[in-house]
Amino acid sequence: MSDIAVRVNNVSKKFRMYHERNQTLKSTIMRGRRSVHEDFWALKDVTFDVPQGSTFGLIGSNGSGKSTLLKCLASIYFPNEGTIAHKGKLAAMLEVGSGFHAELSGRDNIFLNGSILGMSKKDITSKFDEIVDFSGVEQFIDQPVKNYSSGMFVRLGFAIAINVNPDILVVDEVLAVGDQEFQDKCYQKFQDLREAGRTVILVSHSMGTVEKMCDKAAWISHGTLRAVGDAAPTIQAYKDSLSSNS
Amino acid sequence: MRYLKEVFAARELLVNLTMREVRGKYSRTLFGQLWSLANPLALMVIYTFVFGFIFKTEPDVGDPSGLDAFALWLLCGLLPWTFFATVLNVGIGSLVANTGLIQKVYFTRIVLPLSNVASSAYNWLFEMAVLVIVLSIAGAFVLPWVPLMILIMLLLAMFAAGLALMLSIANVYFRDTQYFLTIILQIWMYLSPIIYPVSLVEQASKDVGGLLGTSVSLIDIYRLNPMDHFITVFRNLLYDNRWPDPVEWLVCFAWASITLILGVLVFQRNDKRLAEAL
Ligand SMILES: Nc1ncnc2c1ncn2[C@@H]1O[C@H](COP(=O)(O)OP(=O)(O)OP(=O)(O)O)[C@@H](O)[C@H]1O
Ligand SMILES: [Mg+2]
Image (tube, rainbow over all chains, first blue to last red; front, side, top):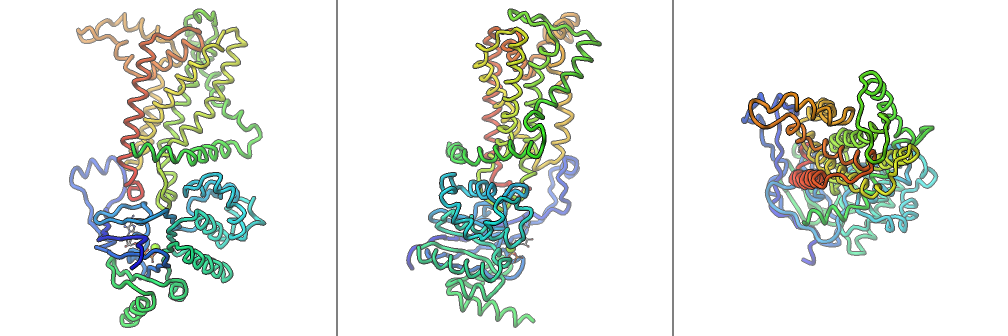
């Protein structure tokens, strides 16, 4: 195998499920030392490598742990066991327009969100036109983003994330909101990225999208890795499991 | 050390977040930045009426400035206090208010409370500039003391920032903290020499004598309050126009640096867990 962009090594992630989750002093004092929670393993011993320059799809049913895994990749959560190593700059887009400020204009949000994602002002200024162009919202760029349609919201957020120029781009189910034209644009962009040796990791429930965009895929079920490898067989295995269940 | 480097690398984000708050705060208002003066001015009118006019509190005449105006004397302590209280009140909620951001994007989380400190400091700087102008018009020779005033402002900002960092973390785990804070700040204000001079406390302390048969007097306990020292330095510089006692400087410096270091340490220990704890 050529170079590895992301190495996920025996990663497990545990959440505490509190039976009464009201964060007050009273409940803590009443409870005393004994804490009333159950452990829930959202990820159990997941291991795989993402080769550099691939477009990697993560598939699995609702609640199987895909978003949790992406959050671990993006250093938002930290695994309880195992390690995740990645090579190069990583940008994550986990939710539509996360970090947008509703009252601010699209223009201000590009600068604010860009700097949250770690771009310098100079970077953003030089990429500004490209971002606006890719998002296709130039007409509304000085409007507050609270007036944007949900598709415009995603487009702008995605345009910024892509222009961070990451070596690894992590995307969680955000493409579904965009229209056909935008999805084609993204497809084109992913291909450009791949040709430039960049890695894309994306989660989608649309098997069509995964089939079309990804060359590698991993299937997660109830927190455990079921299959990983080339996209087509992995998707097939997932589809088979669905049809055998019903 | 690595953590400090990370914070330093995020300085541009800190500036952007601060500017967002500064610009956003008074946008769509007619008077803009002037609103920043409204609250202290209202307090000044109330306290001057109640404590200066009705209770006839008489702080010492400014020495050597010769100033003798309760309202001005009050403002020299009130503006630092309102800044301090604002930083704590806003900073404590800074993490909870940005839950969405923390759970969805990775960035150096400490910039959230720090940007609140910075934007409050921006307003405070504006208020203090107006105060310096008014004091000069009233006849105080305050301009030479401005550099030292900025130094003590910096120390107070550090002290407030350290507390805000710890409180913002505490508030993630116990949402009660912010309601406690409101009460504590009220008590704290009356325990600090803001609307009355320390000399009154000294007098009262002499009358009582040593507490419980020890040599510890009321004023010794009173002096444990760091705000007492900060306010004293502010008044010395601005109202009296003289050198504050070096010991006062030392005490302020110690409180500021220890609190800030502690705040950063507490924050650093917790910031990886924030996304889950919120
Ligand atoms: N912060 C949290 N605290 C407790 N449990 C959590 C937390 N985040 C996720 N979980 C649990 O972890 C499991 C996996 O969630 P996750 O969001 O990763 O699923 P997913 O694969 O992205 O599903 P979907 O396809 O619906 O997006 C779920 O059972 C969820 O309840
Ligand atoms: Mg998900």
